Length: 574
Image 1 (cartoon, rainbow, N blue to C red):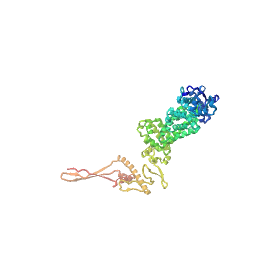
Image 2 (cartoon, helix red, strand yellow):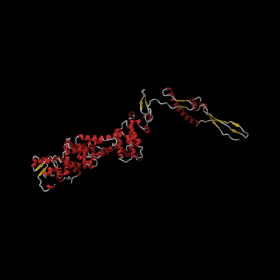
Image 3 (cartoon, rainbow, N blue to C red):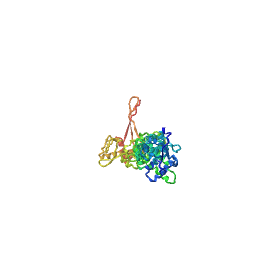
């Protein structure tokens, strides 16, 4: 204070006339009237605000309402007092100056006067229930007083203190959550109503913190009671703007993290939900209070599951967050089950259902960790069953979408096995120029997409040297192919019957040996021709089965009825 230490005070500051102070003692800040848009919640907010002020500062009746000061000190630091005391105003010679209590509070004015005399900030938070809340409230009251008195330097110092209290607007801790939710209504009101540039910058930074990183802000700020109260009492466009900003910032590279934040936020809100069976006015107000938070969390969850469903193969094969969750490294198995259920239930469509099946079967279920964890295996098995049920019940729509054509060959075979369908039913159906529908092999099986029938392979028959390669354009040749294939089937079945019959039929063998003499010491055995004849041949020649047997033997042997085996015996010495 310097030269004013021994000088007597020559002016007294007071918070308005007594009757004006009695009418406005509950309006300690300017935010309630600026943000209140619904009459049915305004009284509740004011009552709640009065309770907070009573806990933080004590009873209003015992607060300091008068300060003795020096006019020169006031005029030196404040352009407002300089114009009042040096100009031609009635207050220039007055010994008492009344200040509007709607702008000034006892704590705020006391802090500003302390700064005028010492150039230091002093925070009176001793004995407060929440010291951080009390400090932010005092900074706001001091800022309002400094702005009214035109103290630009003090305004800048106070804004820096607010920024430091919020950890430079880059933190998501509990303390920053409380600071931001308490400060936002004040800064937003001053930026909109009074066009305060300093508070406009702070408001912009708060909006960035509340919306820039959905995976962090949803599980911290959007589960706090302070933000719920702020959104309930603010203008409707504030809540809508914040919701749109958060949903717009959910992308391919933070969708799973954002969904996890929604998972944690829903659990936190369930804990805060009243469990009493008695419905009161306060309970209904608490439910309405969290409606804005739940709406934003629900929107972010829907957006996240939509992105995960669209890029499901990317997350299953390349994105480390989901793969580490499968391995039990990050997050929990409860979240894994939540992710798959919400994605499959809300966003499974005909065009992406086969892709989801491929990601689960090929990429997730084949991981080493899954084979050693029954819980994960059960979760993935249930997810696969859900996809299979959808594919079977919407098979026509899935086929028309062409989703089967994008599957790997092995996955397609596994899908046919799981659905107990023939693999050919998964081939895409196309319409030819003649109006007929055929199954074509596209992409994964053949490079061509022609709808004409390919040339059949060469068909050879035992006992005949003829080869047949019929053309697809000749109907007679197609009938021959059908007849040949049915003949082979009939022949194989008749061969089995003959093997069974031969077990009960005696076969006589006539062996004729011709001995050829040679040399002086004896003879040696030459070539021996062994003839084997079925004794049942003569009995069956006149029946239909016998004729069929003749036909079969004719196909097997170029000679006809008999099979001749040449056996060469070795020569023996005399």
